[in-house]
Image (cartoon, one colour):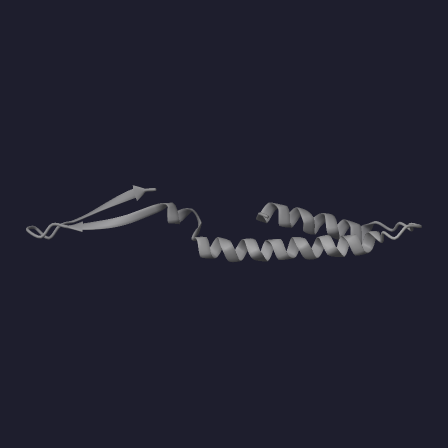
Length: 82
C-alpha cells in the first residue's frame, strides 16, 4: 500500500464515519466500517513513511564516487546510476 492509497482510505473512512448517517437493518454498521478504513489508511501511511525512510528515497539510485589521482592529488567525482 502506498502513501496515496493510505490517504484515500483515510478520507473514505472519515466520510463513512462522520458524514454518513444511515440506519441499516443488517449487521453492517457504516460508522464501524469507516473507523476500520481510517485505521487501515493510517497504518498504511505510517508504514509507507517507515519504509520510505529506510529505502532512502530517489537519492539511493545514484552513487557518488571520488577518485583521487595519487600523482597530482586531484579529485574527480563521478555519478553512477544503477
